[in-house]
Image (cartoon, rainbow, N blue to C red; front, side, top):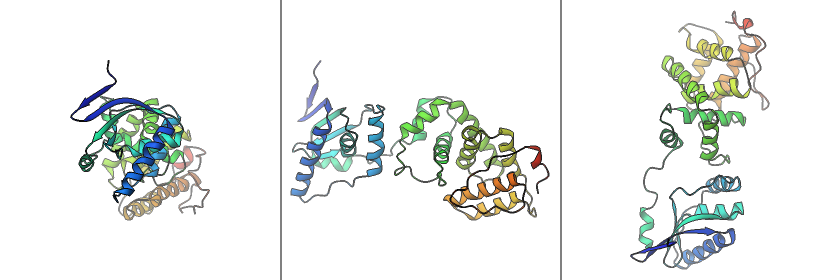
Length: 287
């Protein structure tokens, strides 16, 4: 079978690219862009870091995306993958397309990219929508990151990492998604990704009693307009916060107040985290 296919001046092949070859391609491309006074696409170094990490771990695979070069040798598509090969120090087999018209660069990557949610939906027929966001939230909380709605571009986390976490125990994430949807349905202020992520961080990572954690979220839902409890205070505060680490801190302060048995929110410092519950029965009479 031929390794090369040529059509209308364009050559398509599967080619093993070493780090040295990748660097040569990038250097030549940069020279050509500089000579023509054209700007190359901005490099997203977070993506390069993610791809390189996957390559180092042996998790990188051909997915049909091409590395496309112009007739002269300009990199029209795939510079992040080439940079990742260099950064990882590991060669990769790529789908290489050479001889592409430079005008075609404007048509590349203009569609909607597949999200982690799209991928998991295609991977598993019984996938429950929203599980992807919970996977991300749990992983970030496991890293002691407080902003679960942030981009993962600078966190060295790739979609491969998220998929691996999900496939290790898909039923756990389905159960968490189902629980989070129920909480969100009762009170819209409590977002599914936050509830599901915190629920799994407390029960799976920190190994806290599931009944205690579920009781905590149920208390957050069962509040009255004139209620002066820590749960109502948490609800009121969350209703005013759009996004960011302050949202997770509100859940944490309320949880820690419940664990301590106090009606006041404990002050958080840089070392604060979700406290370990001492006993379920002691929470019954907390206001």
